[in-house]
Image (tube, rainbow, N blue to C red; front, side, top):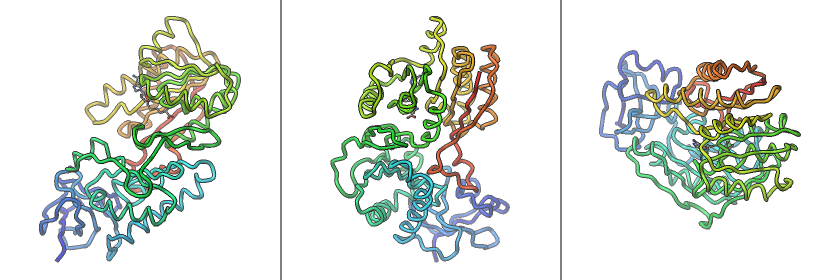
Length: 394
Ligand code: SAH
């Protein structure tokens, strides 16, 4: 008999709603001795089959569901099938506009813990769960088969691996191993991505459509791009005819790459400026100096990583949004984002409103943005929706 998990009475509800996580507290009993990442069947206490899942003995999320279909075998074909299905969605939605996109978005694509990003001819894989790591060879083989022209590179260098009892792992896995920075083409904007050392898998693919949107507002304007990373929003703004763009980031490496990215695009010299600074301090300096801007982009890193940090994070969001609101010219545009999954869109909006209140500036929401369609949100997996954006006009 296979290893099984028996769910406590009543706790099967979320599984019946096809949420893929089984928390340790929902488990009544474990039958057999499943090992790290092993496939287990999940049953209700009444003996009803619910799902087939990957077991993770040290994680609070004790198991993640591979399939809700009885008789579905978890094997090499399963991974080929799921990756192929995921890729079909991207072929229609994003491939016409970019050669860099998320091929697999974990739980939302039925592959818990598996992130696969494509940068032209390199596939970057991040394996975040015990189940995903257990099947890594099958995943690499599936990619080699489905994308024969692509190299496969692992970037599982994230802290959450430790919660799953896994060490960090990086390196070439299939195809060529000399992975130099790759120049991607996103809506015609050229941008170099270093998949070996860049943030996450190299770039913030989820913000693609928000970057595109800045072009609606940038022509002839002064644009302040805060938390610029490798300059994405700044490139789009400059290419749309911005009069002046200022990229601000604390990371010299990011700004170095941003300067290189400018050289890849037909941008008039001197339009883009680079400031190595802490955004919180720099915005205050601009206020003191009486500087103002037509367009301000606030795309900070994740401020919330646990429920405990929510309050502090809100103060951070409020602070930068307050300062940005007071730096906006009349008629100016603020594009403000949060990529903290634990911060709801309602609360984010309220925090921005609080910032405006303190700045004594009345802004109006004229648009909203969210993660690009290659970062879909499984309808049964609300956690997949993490990126929120507001476009406000003064
Ligand atoms: N907008 C970017 C992604 C931003 S990622 C894009 O579209 O690609 C967040 C960036 O914020 C990182 O580059 C990080 O170096 C920078 N950062 C984090 N804290 C900062 C701070 N306090 N001041 C300035 N930059 C900061």
